[in-house]
Image 1 (cartoon, rainbow, N blue to C red):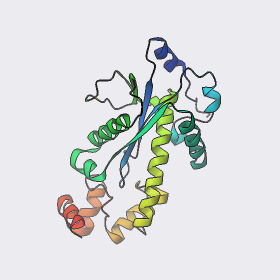
Image 2: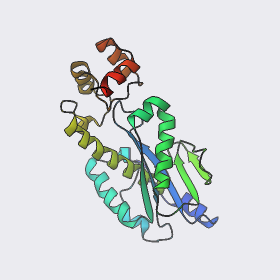
Image 3: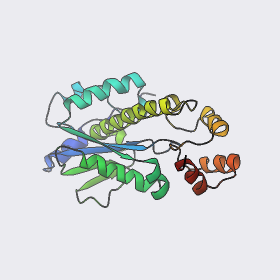
Image 4: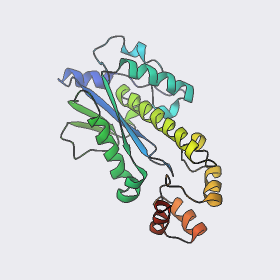
Length: 227
């Protein structure tokens, strides 16, 4: 089944209402066992009639191959009015919870924009601490080109971060599994234990750690940071 690509219909309707700088916002890594959650905000030049032709492949990052995402990332960052990235760290995820840490990453992505947006289009997560008007929709990356662009920036940025972590933590294959719960990843945790990049509050991470080490989550985190 061919997936419908996002278009500019809804963004142009908002543009006609007087919103000139519309930032699409999305995240990557929310369900992973390890690594940060990364959010991106992207403002596209919606008044450019050639914009669809400049971004022909852009859609929800999960529907693209690695090569396609990299091509789209280069095209998006070349034509965007402004774009920014924000990170929620593993410690923030464990201390605050994944949703608050995701909100924090999104807020940081908005703050990283060189131009302040006058409207936010957010995939699923409302940002109550920001006073900027917001449109919040589940699966917004399937419909809004700006949100799909943000999803690609977030995904490519996080994937590159996980490649860097693979060099720091040999044996976990973070560059391949990107911190998600594959069988190989589970085996690595069982064989070597968790790293400081693992989200110890996540199930089944918590179950694996407590079963293999006999330590609860807090004891395990303390033992990691004391090394």
